Image 1 (cartoon, rainbow, N blue to C red):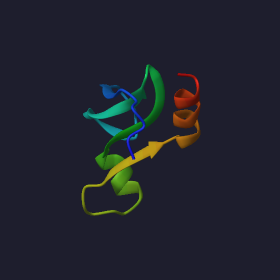
Image 2 (cartoon, one colour):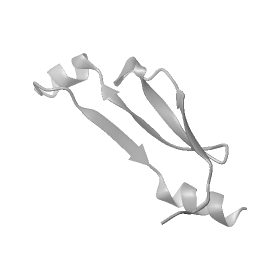
Image 3 (cartoon, rainbow, N blue to C red):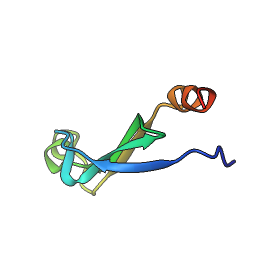
Image 4 (spheres, one colour):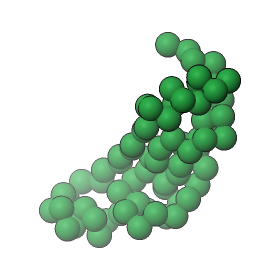
Length: 69
């Protein structure tokens, strides 16, 4: 489904992710999530042996952004 929204990923620093491999998901200038590669220290604490990428998207915010157009 195409909602007709403009999106981008802006680089950020976050302690749970590898620097340079993490960003905030921004839709129509509203921050709606985060995406990136989990930091090795976090993987070690969780006893994970392979690289892991993760993301979190707030769909409620996306709906609000769409309704505010």
